[in-house]
Length: 266
Image (cartoon, rainbow, N blue to C red; front, side):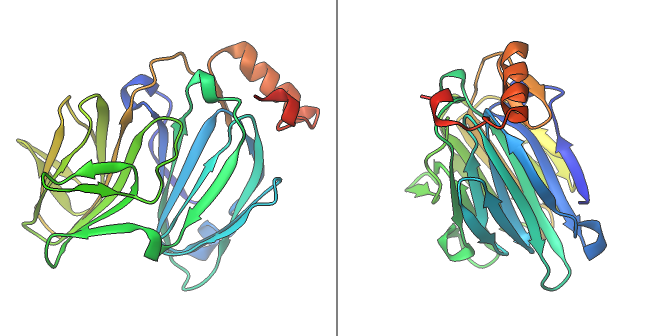
């Protein structure tokens, strides 16, 4: 799988509640034909959003979903999930994003669950031609109305949105004042305050209740915001817990085949 890591675990508190953001992008099927074979997770939630390309999700709980262009899939691993994500070849192109969202300590061993949202289910809010906000998760305000995405059930409140705009367009997005926000420009470039953010860059935003953004050219921007989880982060491979002892237990449970056994959780 051809992956560009936009952000990883080097500064989990500043990025919280998100843990990492990967951009999946290639025009060559050989780069991603291997997909993500079966692998485990515990203690996190994953959200995959595809601009172009198809993936099929399968997990040990019996969930199965085909993620198509413009859609998203969400998995709360909780106490444990073993899943795979494999590409379905269509036109040979693939472009999308996967993010890991942390779970607070009180929810790390909750019951896992999965849900997917095809493109027609993603909430779209247009301010004229060439100014489209696709809201995948959470809710925001545009100053006049509350805008809601289809995914509202997450471990902590988050916002995940995709702003697609032609040159010279502006947008204001209002969210909770205690949310930590960041933007990733995957196409074009934007102005945020006095700063210019170019394609391929992630910008962490200062505290505030609103994001005012202007496109400098045809632009695509991933907007992430959420409630900060101010807790220790212990990370090893696909497991994210609060202590090294909990990581050791996750590894032991996986090796013993009891990673997601019911009596390990709530």
